[in-house]
Image 1 (cartoon, rainbow over the protein chains, first blue to last red):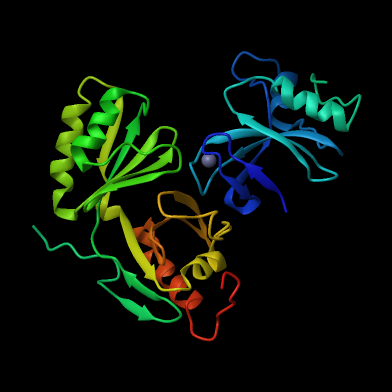
Image 2 (image 1 turned 60 degrees about the horizontal axis):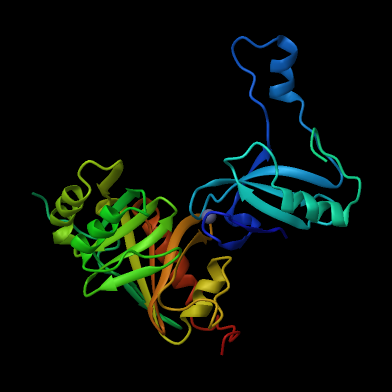
Length: 109
Length: 189
Ligand SMILES: [Zn+2]
């Protein structure tokens, strides 16, 4: 079971109170982009074993979208943070480094 | 004007706890900047209660206000006073960027009372209902079986539940089922 803490209401809830929203920090490619960029945006998602960044929504709570950094092997949640950011906060990255030295995920490490 | 009735028309059930349709409740969804002084005044003018902090619910007599999200409050007043309360809010927030809507008829409210209320909710919601973890003064929006609900304790042994009116019968059924005699677990006893 996954326990997530919503950064907006501070509720520590279990997975079924939330709704998963796929990969985090996607850069949107729309009109004017190349076919490759648009294809990548729509279909090329990572599915790592280990450190992963996802979007979640507190669907049955405050309704807000947020980000979660977690580990797909251990189900450990390294941290959750607001959606209004384009990269994971430093404290969460440090926490991941302490557990999984040398980790990388897309452009982050 | 037609006579308003609550979703379950005052139904009640005596099980391990008493489940009842709590009747008509005036409810106003109020969205906006919760940090603004005008918002504090709007809540005070409409309910007499203080603006609730994160996950809190405040009350004053028959009225109160609950924290729903960082930009949303639920203002509760007697059903017949909702229109008047809405006018007070609109007056207090004039010029602000906000939204206030009377949602009284879109919701249903239930009340369960008795020694086993913590257990009845714990059967239905993924919420820590232990004494100390959930007490009067706080509100929790969560999932009740398959639907969204908000729960709070008005006093020890009494819990109120708000859900969408469209799922009122489902929620009433859930509560009655969880309160069925013979189904006691005794975890919080
Ligand atoms: Zn939340």
